Length: 305
Image (cartoon, rainbow, N blue to C red; front, side):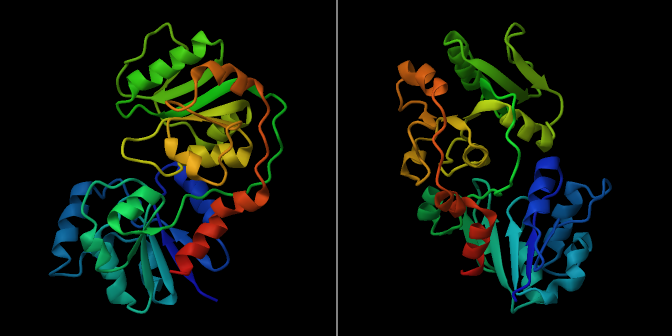
């Protein structure tokens, strides 16, 4: 049996939720670096550069470095990953298949990463553009009781990311159509009118609370990052929790789970049918389609590379 190591961020509740559900008997999931408030980003930068001359970068690595030779595959998630990290893994275990998984859109040169491993990405358009392999997005087929308190409302939670005008415009449009909104924004700036019912978060919402809000809502709002076209976690939350989705991602019409009854695409669908969209029931997506977006399917793609 292949033994797999997955290295990824575990700095928040959402990441920990993913790590917990990704662990298997033959799959270890660990943070790349030691967790310490004393290890500042500048130390990472200095030691990373020195590593070409002295083997010092690995002093920042987590406990996995002592067992790296046990693994046949090492999958590294992009956040905080560096070419020097992949180089160090290859040097210690040259027989292992090393994969960098781009879980986010990248705006920097990936050539140095390709020297040490294959590159996968969740976004088909980016894969075509850069010649990466398509790994897809994934979620977990978790069996949960359906909430008895589901409201005909649209749930949104996220960082502002300079999207305040777009978020506010969508909020106002929904309110004008008498559609209830459950909006939560983490923003360093108070850029939303005080009379709107948007909850301004001072810290990230715990992911267990996110799931609770999803379960109690009939629809999720997704607002894409510029340059991104692949399904986001919000898309898959709607798919796996049986919710409707309002999104500005027009590429979703190309995916096998797309159903006009379940997914309303801003800029493509007529706003006149939005109230009708909200008032109809979700059409169940067959399990065989959902399986294409499970963690198990994603992991199979990584191992078959």
